[in-house]
Image (cartoon, rainbow, N blue to C red; front, side, top):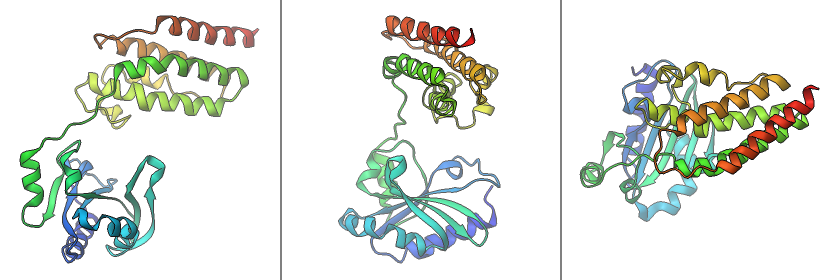
Length: 263
């Protein structure tokens, strides 16, 4: 559902960008692409440009963002590892817009086929016809190699009483491991914890147990719940080399820390 604020911004963006000879198209990803927008949706837009102007575009991306509407605040996405993105808040009616600047060549490697809002001479359509998207999936062995180290790290934070640190640590485990694995098991793309409330049909209550309060007992039980859920989810992966000794040592250490502090 496109709201008037969405439609107005897209209209302005197409009008402005089509006048820039460096720009070859405007695409939409996210909920607009999947036709699942609601009143809380932001816009995920992709500005496609000629690679001959890459230096110019990258140095001017904030200025380009300012030209698309009333920019209240905007900043580049280095903090999430994506400097090509400008994260914007437009006004006067508040609208969050992520603008990603990519070259035509960069479209050859993509995780999805965004919705084409405007293009010049069908250059983007031709790329989509010749190449195919590939969404990255978590590497089960990568996770297993790290998971028990993360458990040990969490146990040290429990022992020190650094519960805020441990809460953030468990949040990371939920976002990087448990959420994606649950989504995959339910036939969805592994997008962190996005819409787990909708798709985690059989795992929702177990996921809730991984959310700790700021207390020793709650953090301990949340970490234990994360371990239990991971053990269940990893069984779906074949050819997985289990780090059994690391698992045994890290879980035993967690119990040792817990027992030593409840006495």
